[in-house]
Image: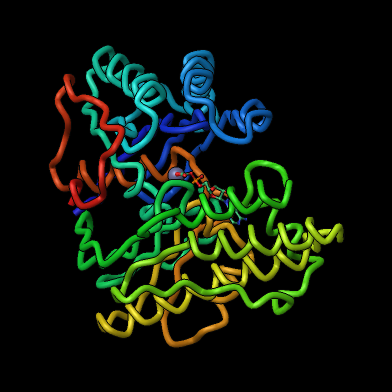
Length: 344
Ligand code: KG4
Ligand code: ZN
């Protein structure tokens, strides 16, 4: 039987990146375009929601056109449209969703609203057209999803099935990076800045707490953040130079240690053989190295360009919904607080 190729246009506008992409069969990236607002928000030290939605309005149409052009396709060549419906900033989400609905209506294409978090998980399936396919994740698996707004440990027994094992009881991992970067007066976004500063520092200079909670699969980063704050204040009140690189390296080691150890423990407990690490924080070199250096599990970490927000991951997740026969009607709404469990 001839295999039918499905080409999905993905659209993402949940936070500060306007993105569009064309992905074939949930895996092959034909194009992926990202218009980033990072420089604009850097002056505020975080995402400024009102500005974000206005920038999405300005960028979204050109971004989608660019993605279609780069894939050498017209709307009529597509088989469906996938768009992020949540979680994220409501005013930003509606921009992508409204354009996606308009395109679906005019080109008579099916549409599906995708959970941004499942997009991050499905980034582990993606590879660039024309390059060697990456190994496909096999179920059951444990996924660690670490982004600016989320830290989740998820057990997946099959496509689109998410059993939430644990999460964060306070800050998300990326949020901790961003807040500690601010304490250290490093540039926004904090993750890449801390990673850069940490390269010159000693990860054993400070013994920050790794923050394990009694519940087996939960994380907490606020104690660690407070420990960093106290250390910075001690140096400042003693009129000493704050050892930024050593603090950054020790903080990063504490976060990576906690994420790595809990994920490995969960993978053992639930007797899986594969692990996915995804979301913006999975771009972190130390985290990638920790997972790559173990040989007990087969680990899938997306290419660095696919760890932070993009639309290829939305198209990849949308593909799985279309294959499962799930589409959205044209009156679906955005959901700023959508959870992954609600999409299972
Ligand atoms: O997935 P993402 O692009 O957006 C959300 O869905 O939140 O993640 C953004 C987060 C930010 O907190 C950023 O500081 C963090 O990912 N991040 C990193 C690195 N690159 C981005 N954290 C640590 N190391 C990095 N290299
Ligand atoms: Zn994200």
